[in-house]
Length: 352
Image (cartoon, rainbow, N blue to C red; front, side, top):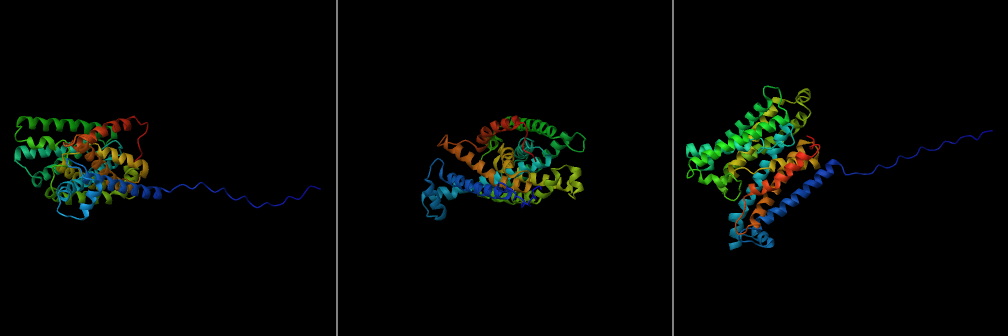
């Protein structure tokens, strides 16, 4: 007689290897970025033509004692550091916006002609209208950035419903070359009038005062707020216009508001610094490796990580040729060019 089979209790499933969730990784990443921002901020307060020990710079930041170190930190380096944080966030979020709107991970305000449009408009305002303060030519920067954005999209789409990413990049590069050529031509015609714009176009955070920062601050904050509000609809647009519309996203409204935010951020940042290249290209692309394609996290990460890059580049520019300095835009270009080559050579860019 064959043995009666006994029922065995079902085997317990093997515990899956625990991995940190996306949320945990993103939260940890934010803490790392905030720590890095604090470190480079302190270095920005410490280094310059008259270097201070970081401990001393930290002390006078909280106790304004009237000493020479206190004057250096409060009147020169603190406004410069705050400006670096502000324009870094502006260019970083502008890059994230334009990459999301065009669905092109290799796009940014500088590469697509937006910063060039703002810079050319400022050159026209200074040369033909005699504007010498940011209160006057800030409006030219906004108009130039908006017109350049629209032109690039129209040229890239060439009558189609949507513009292919590669066509948008080519149109942006071509428009950038043309506008920069015209701006250079104008400055050569009357060198005395455009003398102040020579170094401005290199991208610097050293020659902007608190009054100018206060003038542009509301526009940059408005652009950042609009960008944050658009993060959800931009996630839908990444799936395609038709699918986004079927999900209830107002595609046209989102694109218009995106252009408004991009104009405020890129135009305001360019008016303050003359434009700092590659920040909007590198930062959103790199942070996407850690955040995934969620635009809400990409925008937040870019707003915090881009100032780290700008301040680090500024500190490097002050240290390597002390007591002189190299403009931030030059340092970021030296860093950004190899990064751009590496991104282009990647088999697959980070997904949007």
